[in-house]
Image 1 (cartoon, rainbow, N blue to C red):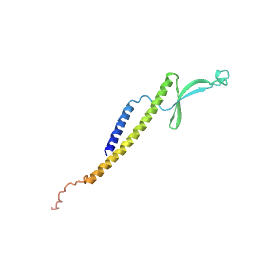
Image 2 (tube, helix red, strand yellow):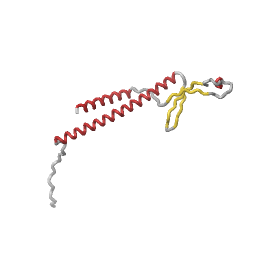
Image 3 (cartoon, rainbow, N blue to C red):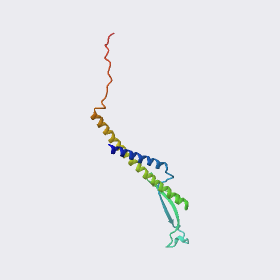
Length: 143
């Protein structure tokens, strides 16, 4: 039983560490950052040449919302790096959530084991018998 209590303590410490990590979560966003190049279609433009990658790069953030892909343009420069960091933070958050669920599930399982062991121990000792209150004798129905 001592090892069970030690495991219970360890999982509770893990859960507290995860709660602290949740408090430190910064700006986040789901999705993927995609670099796009496009050709404008004008015959005299540099993008019309065979070896040209086209215009760009243009950055877009894509993600699924209600089963549909939503695309949002991201300006170049610092905004691209900021979006990358927000996406990384989202992935870190999702990992934290999964770890929290796993630890919580283990805690619940151990607590059930502890409860069963306590019930079994009480039954072996003859404890946990229900004590009944003494009832007062029934009164006669005299008028």
